[in-house]
Structure formats: structure tokens, C-alpha cells
Length: 412
Ligand SMILES: *Cc1c(COP(=O)(O)O)cnc(C)c1O
Image (cartoon, rainbow, N blue to C red):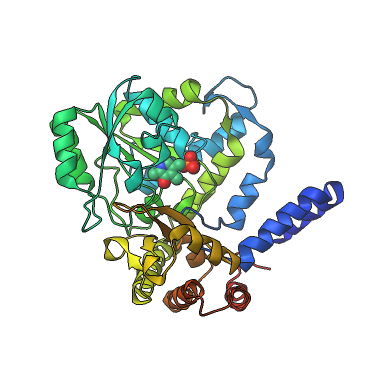
């Protein structure tokens, strides 16, 4: 915890001890357990400072230089910085940094390119599609006609032939590539080719890999997709929030799809924090971080496979691993509960072509803490031992506490 955060916690403790306990309790939870949730990370103290700044007080509907509210001259600088840094970081002609979340970014992309009722081709939900890729519980499934493609039952890789066939037969208005559970690189050139053939727009929903793209260890969707949607958190390590990248010709449509079509005023404290994160992501230190994230995921995947778990696609190119613990005698849901009791925090997820549930793990947060391949092998051994019943929960919890204490996410 930094000095300024200690002071803020003191202010809160005096005024609202109940809520102060929540903040301190969550900080303790994050720093004493292992955070293997693939979507999570630890933002820097500078990002947290921007989030907790008086920019949170400002109303700023519209865009820099053209706001509906007065007094925006200073926050305009923050948004211009965020936009310029995002464009430079990803080599994009246009960036919109106002989307409140990844889902808001996708909603705006659809609003910019589609009409209700249009057909959209996306990775099916059982194979790792996001809610916004046609879930009946989401606006996307209600307002558009989604057709799902899948992954090959043997390899676990995206079934490119099926994508091509569905694009030819269903003539979608847009094709979405991107997933919440795909551990391999996506072939954006392939999706561009199929989209061109079908006369469809290509939307890359790259929330998960975008930090790896920034760090130069994953291919960029920017040269291929008409619109790229992403979050600024996850591997990118900024504040919870969304962004949209596109070419100059779609800039105005995308901006209007965000405000005024799907959102009101921009959240300037978050946009300032996005600018800080984009600045950090442009440094050699971040490239080294992204490289280590992937090295750690590969080490963790290999060690889990050696312990007998089934790792889908046989490994990973990214920060993300999908593993089936069934050979150890537990299903994903039971495994998640047992591991949580030992302080190992992760998600379970659908397994392609299987009724059971698997585990989804990611290395973005533990890598920010400074852990390396050695720690990943230790974690895999502990995880498997807990699932087999070889290590008692209390003993494992102590091991986790000790490991986490050696790698504090924030300086004490
Ligand atoms: C995380 C994610 C989202 C949604 O982001 P939220 O900020 O939770 O709305 C959308 N699509 C994909 C592919 C994601 O990984």
C-alpha cells in the first residue's frame, strides 16, 4: 500500500469504518491469496491514483473540444492524451476511450455497423464466446440473429472450415472473432479474408489478448478488423473499462455509437487512468512483462499437464489456460471450490464438446507480482495435490500465504 492510499484508508476508517473494513479486507484477500482469474491483474499505484482523483467529480458529455458541459478544458487534456497514446500503442487511426466496459465497447461496435435483426457470426458460447456474442440473456442475443461457429473436437482449435462455410451459407452482416477462453492466437488474416468473401464487417473482440498485443507477444487485430473492441484492464493492466479502435473512415460512426447512442457522460477519472496505463504499456518494462506472462502460462500449462490435468489445445500462446481436472477425480466446479478454500482463486468454464466444467487460469496477476516459472511449477504441484487430497486444505492455505507474501502486489 502506498502512502497516499494509507491516508485515504485513514479518512475512510474515521468516517465509515464499515466500508473501510471492506477495502482493507479486499486488499488483504488480493495480497494473501493466489489470483489466477484470467481476466484480472493488479493496476499500478499511478493508475489507482488517477481513479481516486477529483476527476471523478467532472461531468463531460461529448468529446474534447466539443462538450455539452462547461469547465472541461483540463479533463479534455486527459482524454486527448488517452486517445493519442492508444493510437500510438496499437498503431490505430482512431481510438475511442469512453466505453465504460468491454461489453459497452461491443454494444457500440454493433450500433456503429448493424441494424436490429442482422445476422452475426461469432464463436458459440459453449466454445468461449462472450455474453455479447449472442447469449439469449444478453442484448446481443435478443437484438441480432447470431450464428455460432465452434472449435475442432480433437485439437480444440477454431474450426476454420466451419467459419468459411457458415459465412458463405448464412451471409452474416458481421463476423466477430475473439473469446473469453481461447488460449491460442487468433488468425486475423483468415477472418479478414472470410469477411471480405462474405461482404461482412469484421469485429475483433480482443479484450483478453490486447495487453499481449501492446507488449508485442501476440498478433494485432488492428490491421485486419474494421473495429477492434477491448477492455483496458485484463493483461493490459489499466482500470476496468473499454476502448474501441478503428480506421479513420469509421471514426465518426464509432464515436456517435458510444455517445450519444449507448452512453451519456464520459468517466474522466477512468479515462485519465486509461491514459496512465497506455503510457505504462508503451515501456520496455511492459514488453518484458508481457513476455513473462506468456512464459509463465506455458510453464503452468506444462506443469498442470504433467500432473495429469487435460490442457485444451495442448498448451497456450497467451496468458490463459483451460484445464480439465477430471483425470484427478474431480469436476471443474468441485475443483474451484476446493482450491478457493486453499487460497487458489480461479474460474471454472465450459469445456468444448464435453458436458463437464473445466478450470480457466491466467498468469497476468501473478506475473505482475513478480512470480516466474519456478513459482508456476510450485503452484501446479500444490493445485494438483489439493485436488487429489494429498495436501490438507489448511496446509495448502499456509503454503499459498507464504508464496503470496514473498510477492506483494503493492509495496508495503
Ligand atoms: C472481458 C470481455 C468482455 C467484457 O468486458 P466487461 O468489461 O466485463 O464488460 C467482452 N468480450 C470479451 C471477449 C472479453 O474477454
